[in-house]
Amino acid sequence: MKILVDADSCPRPARELILKTAIRRRIKAIFAANRPIPGIGGPDGEFSLMELCPAGEGAADDRIVELAEPGDLAVTRDIPLASRLVEASILVIDDRGQVYTRENIRERLSLRDFMVELAQSGLGMERIATYGKKELKTFADGLDRVLVKLTKNI
Image 1: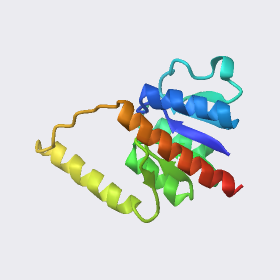
Image 2: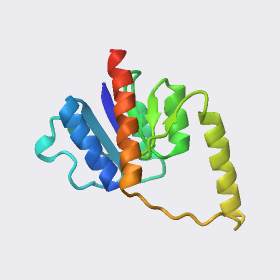
Image 3: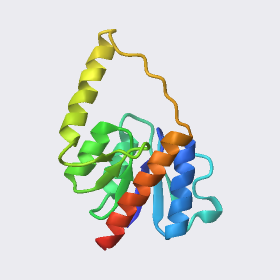
């Protein structure tokens, strides 16, 4: 089992939590991004790996899908990527603790597409991106829940 992380958009506190969790649980965490992410690999490289992907739209997403196997966990806020992974029977959670499943991914993807259309029409809602202690706690709780679920299935 491994944890695959869409590192380009993953907030630093969530990445740090994933690293600590990977070391504590002795699970390999693979961070895929189009740029180097500080703190990945390094002295704890036994449990973390940085997959530096070529520049270009979707390269990191494609690499995550390539590496994913049933029994793995993926962390991403990218709903189209989550959809691809869910269809491949990969458990997916976002950096706020939301688990994506076969039951909810189509609705999430439809809502995301609608919001993109609104934004392209100039009607998009203003988003305030905050990631504080509350969001990190919700993610930590969700991460623990899904890891317990996955390790029971091994």
